[in-house]
Length: 118
Image (tube, rainbow, N blue to C red):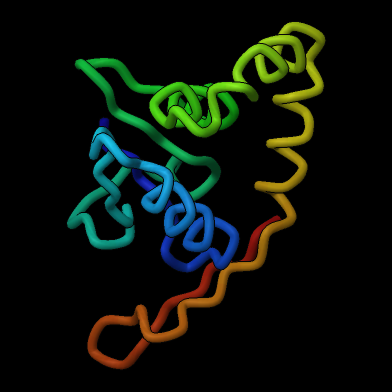
């Protein structure tokens, strides 16, 4: 499973560090989409996971990651309940929309282009 996260986002970067520590079976590979030559703009809006030819985004991507980490399996049933009643997606979108992007030590050639969110 490849987890595409935003290296300009402190929440995303910290989450990937924690997930790496919990990934005892080495099932996850992490990549900043910012390092890709050409990436879909949707990656700027939410977490993306690619697994066995399928793409998962946002809360669904978070659920797929959680299912791969035995220490977090206890959370999976609750995540499905939150998904079913719509709260999981709602909270994910709220956090994703309000996260801060700071490209510290991430800019190529010493210059960063920061786009303004609307």
